[in-house]
Image (tube, rainbow, N blue to C red; front, side, top):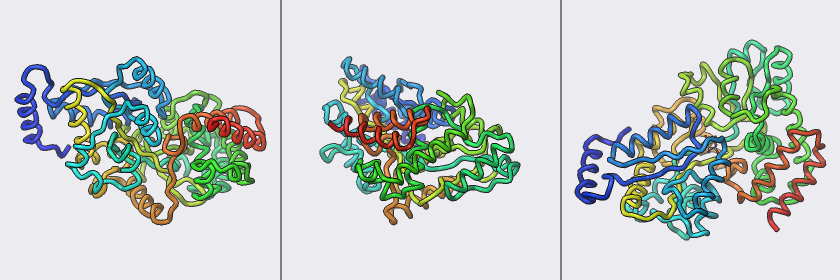
Length: 419
Ligand code: BGC
């Protein structure tokens, strides 16, 4: 980390002087999060140790379960019981939903002093604010629409990285014929939804994606393009291994590493697993932009601050907020997590080819207006709408429902969630 020993030592000293008896020097934070896989745990450990290096006390509250659905249930129970954690992994419209309920606290004094408005892309800054004040701090930017592959496995099956969905299907058929599972997948609703939105972008393009999954436009949802999306989902279902149901995403990633499977369609937190296992980008694994029309599905993790009492906890929130936005943390966290920094201007020299591609594509897709927010990862719609979409996508994936029926149900489900 770039936090100098001097700064940390001084921080500890000042903290001790300011709160002689009741307070931990850098305050106390309880952080509720779902970063529990190998790569994720390494990434969050960098925040914990940096916080502790400033004299703070870190109370870890991990809730296992990729995509965060279990963590959000745990959070609701804590808030209802009147005992929220001080800091929570939260994102997108969820931040606004909790803020509207009056349970978030603002960290605007820190943000103003450190000029966060100048350090963040406007699209992220606005997500972090409620009524113009920062209530959350972004830790990174993940790209959702990637394929992860093992180059040795592709070579064995004589398969090239696909650039269209037809090429993907042809490559998957070849892998299957070679006795390799074409698609590494875990059958959990958020993972099915990750496939779904990647296919929506690839077959429909960014404008269609926005109409269907952000604006929830019924014409887009009932279009022939959406039928084709479900047709492709049915194809994908035929490419997974028999034991896919309920499997965690990182176990699916492990089947890419050990040569059992050909492709995984997953966000770049998958890279965190390869890196944690000592694998090298471009050599041991490939990151291939997902097939079809161009675009970047954006997912940004952030930490929101909940209303808590006591000088010690308030101090902890301030120290944590400042730490999260520091250049050193943003770099170290993303190097471990597979993401890229949320903060602008962090040097790219330590990042691998996948991260650099992500940085370049983020800039290019922002300019081309093909940057879209992830529905599956809670950047696009409310939790209730997302829940309804996930139900339909999962039910279709796990049954013989026709694409036409799936589209019908999708419209009804979205109407229900919005009424
Ligand atoms: C989060 C990532 C996390 C992934 C799997 C996503 O929703 O944004 O940080 O690694 O879920 O748990």
